Length: 255
Image 1: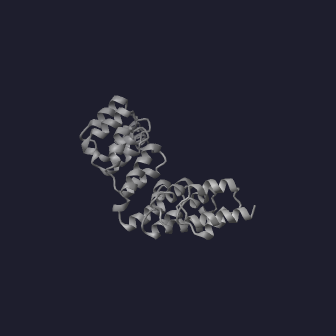
Image 2: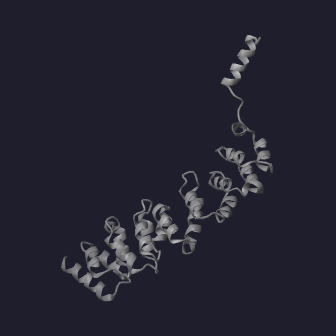
């Protein structure tokens, strides 16, 4: 016959099960986490549980980066780079080892420090010529603003047009792209006709400085600008001299 106290113990154990190892690792002391991070038997699940701790000391993150058994695991490496406290001398070299969409994920993760995101973007942009058309289309649509800006200079017009619609693309990256020497007529014309970007004042100034803007658009963008400002913009413009002269004449005639 089972005694009442035994029943109570069984009921209590059922209601409060022993914590799992994954849960226990969240409450380890600093020295214990250091030992866990260095343990060659550390599993992927335990490493990921450890990396859930936002308070991990830098020393523990550095120790994890030296643990070759877990560092070869993609999820662990990705989570380590994405941790807000991972030192740059650990995260930046690791970034170069990731594939295209892992880099995009790092750049879009809110908790990742800004300079690490920039490093991920820079690696992505440096690889754009070697990735497939399908990957470039995906990056143009879903990548960060910096990457979308890089995609504006893609040789495929479809990629460029999708990048122009990227919700993360900012005016700064549009201007940087259209002022680059390699910006072609297709990009300039697409921006000059774009329902959003063509109405931005600073974008118009940048377009007036390029060599590929049509006469009709140049006249439209120059209209209403104070003559001294228009002269300043056109002074550094690469547009043909005849177009610049006509834009100035039209502007003077409207004064």
